[in-house]
Image (cartoon, rainbow over the protein chains, first blue to last red):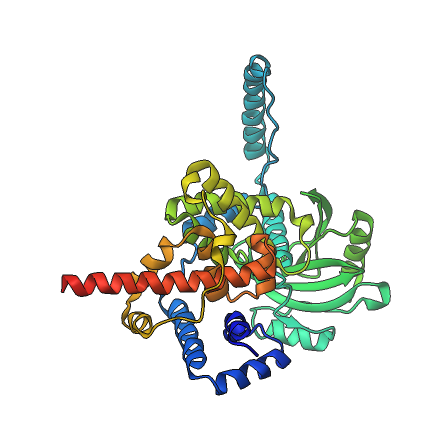
Length: 249
Length: 164
């Protein structure tokens, strides 16, 4: 190996990006060449200095809070066109009045508890699928997932496998919804991930289906537990799954 | 809870060099990321950082075009063989403030390569994808960036010797 070749590979070597064969070749060159060895040492020191001493700017809590508030309901951008200004103003006024009326109607007529929970479970589902952190305990065995969750919660969520029906148990995780710690059971149907949020709910509740941002949501309460299902699975199959869960012993 | 938000902010903060601007850029980029969730292929972190990085460069082009002007990878040819020992000494003596200043003074392309490599621990392949250049360019930017950093640390160190 020539000096030039070695110099060109030095950074990749220090960064651990050389394949085994090239590494061996370069190490042989370094062994017989003190100047190149010193250069590689300096590169290591430089790398370590940046890692140890350069500031890592973690996101401020206020930014995370703002994002959390806006993520599940991020409004679509309205394309603007030139020449529409004359139409836009009365249109905007009407839209504003409609919005205020709607907000007042929603606030006065419904407590909005269900909608709030729907947004929270949806946000959790989107975040975890985006981050690839689907479960804290990965297992298709209900007898592994259930005790893991029970040990960390003040209740014991019912966990069943429905792989015979095409809904495979993948694992479980913990989350925080509606002001309490809840269990999340993760199932998979084909390539679709289904999150099932479970927490104690004393009152029975009939099934309810929602669609938010293209995700389907099902909720019901049965046998002392409230269930919220979130997935990009189609509405019919998610409804089937909700009925399966509700019928489980 | 938001995945990779710290990595997103760290990159944007190093590219804009300002907390306030970084917050604005990251907020916009994250909302875009959520809107285009369908485009997610493979790992989430490089995908998200690609969006954040592009938002940063768009923002820089609009607000501080001078910082991006005049950059040419051809000037980033390797001159590696000749690193002298005074630089090593400067590196050992430099403190946090000096290192941060020197790093912030690098041009954006060298800075982003070093931040993604050393602070986010990403592979050359991921860095190439995020910064939209070939892997060979990532290698030469890292090499040139480290070399410039060493030189500027030495300059800072010399200057502070004079003042003592």
